[in-house]
Image (cartoon, rainbow, N blue to C red):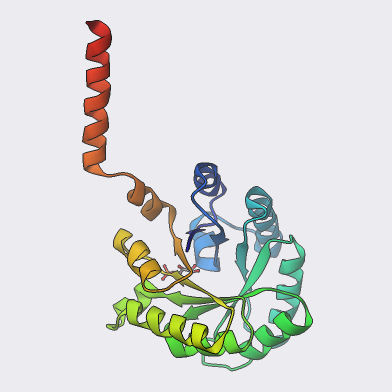
Length: 227
Ligand code: E4P
């Protein structure tokens, strides 16, 4: 069981890495845009190399920025070459359901020694196929699943049972985390990894009653030193 940080913000990554509570980092183009990345592939390369060095040997997921078959392959091989701890995110299929992606995943894992994180998946059946293609990580988007009206917990449970029964080694990452509650419930449901945004991770640590208790300890400590 592990927690990854879903962030492209170097300061946030540094903050939680220093606490020793994260076991990896995931990014995607939307997260990087939100975290201020501009400047195309050069800027992407610079930011990802910085993060990879910062968290080494923990794994970093970097997503390709295209859905063209050959370009996905080229980018994935290039991105994986930036650092030993980089794995490459490929979506389960293209924006219109194009089916080149699993072939690319299979080629990368079997012929190019690139570890792949198959992403943007909304069901156990997609996860199973990504695992059969050889993906190192299979990413389900729990918050989006719940928003569609079915339960991420059931998809995680189904997928974990399928992977274990078939002897498939892919690790389930559950992302798209929306509530603090999701982290523990999704780990308990069988996810190997939950990837969490910095604000949710901070929310897991800070509790109003813990604050009150700490204030009491500090106030009483001060009183004893004044007596
Ligand atoms: C997982 O790896 C993704 O980066 C992520 O959690 C996306 O979730 P969201 O776009 O639904 O927030």
